[in-house]
Length: 317
Image (tube, rainbow, N blue to C red; front, side, top):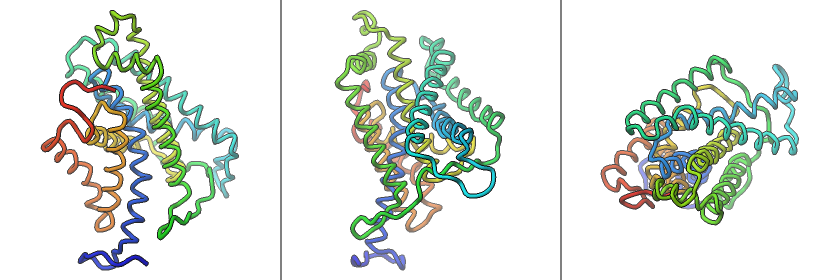
């Protein structure tokens, strides 16, 4: 047992704080997966896509219904565990479906306003978010849905603490996805096109970059990452609602601002910092934990508006 921390709150030990930090890393990993969608779109278009949280929600539902059709979400009785090969198919299918939704949103809602004022684009983004929330309630129903069992939840010992195996899967999958995305943007030709558009879209077009295709790809990648986050959260907390993306999307946006919106490593760092801060504060009070994200946003805007890894001036993906 580790020694007690010097605190007035009874029962709070260093071991408990470490446990909360580990849980916060898992929570922050999901924030990071969603935050990269905000940061990539902003880096290219200087647009905050407030409908991104709803794409995260759709990602969870896009894996729920196929599992239900295959019989892994029975109405009553014990839920059968989804086989490994089907889990992979559900992840890939959800990513593909959300990528298509992201490109559709960009084509129908944002591309016609590309040369309009930022205020018009911002109002449109809020409108798309509200449309998807209400459409989700109409299509999926407002009642919560139980997600299929991907794995039996067990505790994995990690030194002096234990971590649920579902949270460990979240951390590992998020790390792989974030690393893969960073390498794609930095070391591939399409990634170079994205970076060129983020630097100067007009010059990139003159240099032969297909700007419309690059922007659509940016939305697709960001939406696919949000889909992964949706499935991972549903796997750990099996309760789906059409409004589940509202608060999660807002906190992921704050994580992107904290890390430096426009920077993929910044989005990852901001998500982890925010997740750990919420979990540690939750050790003392779950009520105050919900306010941490908004306090962090205010402090960042006051002290360092460019974020932890952001640079003043024009942001880049």
